[in-house]
Length: 61
Image (cartoon, rainbow, N blue to C red; front, side, top):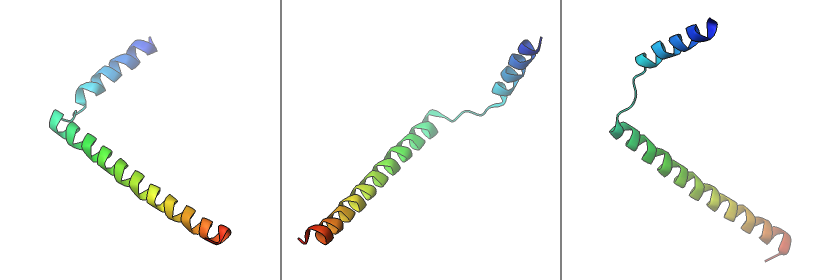
């Protein structure tokens, strides 16, 4: 059956996968968290600046 052949092939491929170590996984996770925080801070500052500029322009403050 094709289904059994497919799962056999998947099992064979999964044995060839090189999984990251716990140390690599932890490092990559912290990199993603830090990058996400930096982007969040950057875009919050840009948003704040755009709002301030638009309010000054339209409200005359």
